[in-house]
Length: 80
Image (cartoon, rainbow, N blue to C red; front, side, top):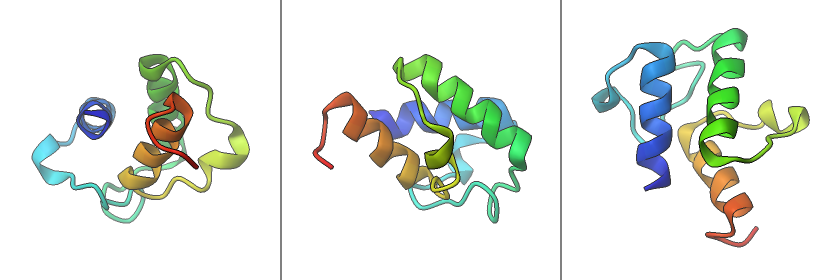
């Protein structure tokens, strides 16, 4: 469920069909997201999941899996 919600957000922000995204898809190398795209995605994720993603962690989010894991940890779905 978290993956699907994130994929929808990324699809909207980058105007890329959801079918082109898998869990290990890289934001930069595969989706060609630049720093502004990443910032907008992070803002949308924070709003959607009502969390805050610290700046120091943003640079560690390389793939959709990284974003899913971070969000699941902060929602209490999985342990760190």
